[in-house]
Length: 225
Ligand SMILES: Nc1ncnc2c1ncn2[C@@H]1O[C@H](COP(=O)(O)OP(=O)(O)OP(=O)(O)O)[C@@H](O)[C@H]1O
Ligand SMILES: [Mg+2]
Image (spheres, rainbow, N blue to C red):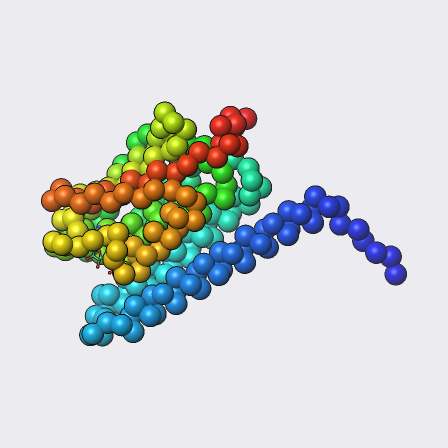
């Protein structure tokens, strides 16, 4: 019987894809487990609407990760990509997954091209996902249409600054987002730490703003072809 030798490059690509998929599945499992434990800690059962949003939220996270795998499948993990185009694609998908007649949402994008390492994209996009899910749930308790803005800019010092805002009621009085034990804020803090990014949260009566400052990677200064 003859042996078919797989060229090393193909083998490497498959190994990297498997590694990425395994990491993403581990991340999804831990997100769902964190959600299960936060439900268990509640002092009252969730309402039908809360269960619906919770399940829609899980579906949106799974679908976001699936979409990222497709978008990034041709770029090696240590390659460079334009974050701006992923922000557009993913927000379009989140809007169609999460908006409903009771809570519609429009998103405005501003900023410039922002080159990032491929391995930085998933944590950044998952932070955006948590921010969107929360904005749909809490920004407008009366259900008025939600307006979100997503701004991505390279800063002078080489960092890139991603600013995501909603036009809602802001955080509850006395709420500290830096120490909150809520699933969303815990996930955002740990994803930001994973890529060495700084996450600032600014709450006013005009809405909630998240500013993620991502360190430049040496490779990201390389121009895309
Ligand atoms: N965009 C927002 N506008 C107003 N309040 C918000 C917003 N985002 C979050 N909050 C407040 O922050 C709290 C914590 O959010 P977090 O995502 O950590 O947990 P959660 O959404 O309540 O639960 P889970 O994420 O497990 O479904 C929310 O309960 C809500 O009171
Ligand atoms: Mg949340």
